[in-house]
Amino acid sequence: MPYVLIRHKVADYPKWRRAFDAHAKVRRSGGSKGGRLFRSAARPKDVFILFRWSDLRQAKKFTKSAALRKAMKAAGVRGKADVFFLQESARTTN
Image (cartoon, one colour):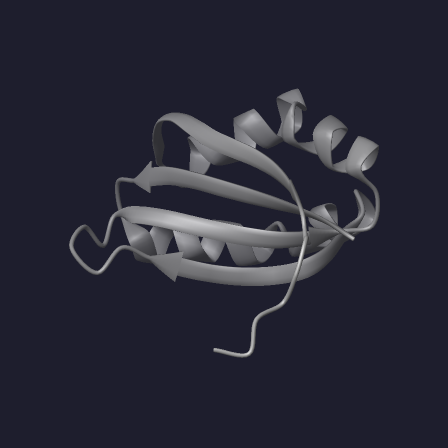
């Protein structure tokens, strides 16, 4: 299963989080299978999101969409997001 890792900075985390949560249905319709949110311990406005995605092509299409860029801007994302497309290669026990 492919994963998408996104890192971006936000102006106001609570505002961004509300917009992120409101966007869940759109992500699901684009193929997202859910994910996990992280914030930098040193810089809490740096947000990392690790999504599971049903299909790599759908993930790339979604992350490049004008609708997503518009939603991110409205949510207070600062600058350009770093986006990485990943394939799980192994699981570790420690």
